[in-house]
Length: 74
Image (cartoon, rainbow, N blue to C red; front, side, top):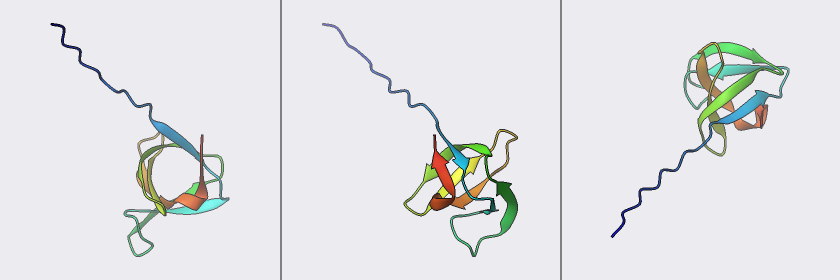
């Protein structure tokens, strides 16, 4: 008998900021603490997302939440 183990490796999803300037929050709500602004063209990695909010991380390590409509997945 042969036992096979299958590992699913999912590639990280990436996005780019589509809005000229978007507020990045500490959590998935506009009532959360505003952290910083991200600008159009900035690339980021998607950590998790819902239908409205997406948790992203920039190459410099900064993380936060933006509304899904402000990014374009690449």
